[in-house]
Amino acid sequence: MALYHIISVFRCMTISHLAARSLSAVQFNDAHYNLPVRSHNPRGHTLGIIGLGDIGFAIAKKVEAALGMRILYNDIVRKELQEQEVSATFCPNLETMLSESDCVLIATPFAGKQLVTADLLRLFKPGSRLVNIARGSLIDEDALAEALEEGKLTAVGMDVHAQEPTVNERLAQNWNVTMTSHNGGGAFETIVGFERLAMENVDAVLNGREPLSAVNAYLIHAQNGTGPVNESDTHGSHNGTNGYTTNGEHVNDHPEAAQDTNGHMTNGHMTNGQLVVDHNEARQDNDGQMTNGHATNAGHEGERQNGTTTDARIQNDQMRNTHTSIIGGV
Image (cartoon, rainbow, N blue to C red; front, side, top):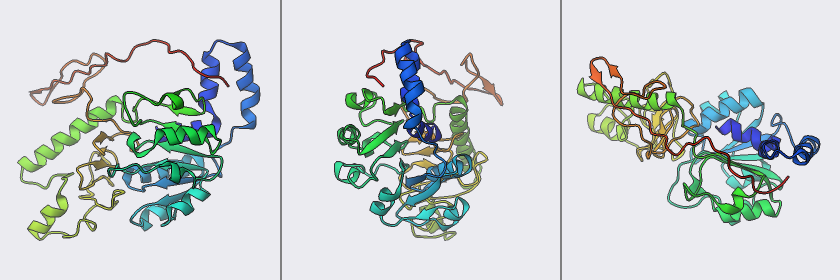
């Protein structure tokens, strides 16, 4: 999902998409002939990542390999091993990173207050872009709309929104904004992986083993005298963006899986209460319909696994094959 939005904000994909679906030859030709002069390839441009936790790092690896972008990052903890792998540069000063980034990606947990405010937006590089795949409440959306309208930013990508399921009207009407409906983790494989991880944790504990992704693993280690006693120095090989991680064991074939102490899984599992399993940058909030067991195939019927009946009906009543009206113009 993150790569989709990054490509979209550089290549003006939403304008092209809406123009094609408008059924207007005029809008189609306008996009076809005029978008190339304002579109850019991501390669060679700079991506600034706010939060190089497991999700941010997974995105950085894909961006570096697939898009050839220069990577900067800001975090409360320097991640030297990760930055070496993706040739990233640590920016302890957020203002410095913002001033140098052609696109800023938000991949940090919500810490109780807005991160991207009107004041912070003034520090962005003129004409840059913003992508948010973390939490909608991290952004002052009215200030963001104003920054777009004033030309401070050229494009925005949003998979998450401050008042879900309601989206900001000013942003929705702006064709320079790519919007998705919090679908980062909305894949069948993601749901199955989440259910599997939960069962693996239960199985481990019931059989006397250490859980794979304990919220309070650092406390368990401290109590047992088997590990570090400092929250910020735990077993995980990759720290979350708040500096707290636990138990970086192999989980669902994700060797860098970890979990922060707020109970939010990172890298391949869950972050901020959002499901992240198959695609590391993806998320799905806990209001989903999946319950008690493994998801099944296209029929979505309960499935019998290892002698245990599972009940995993997927309800998708709100997804309709309907067309929405296109607002705005090229």
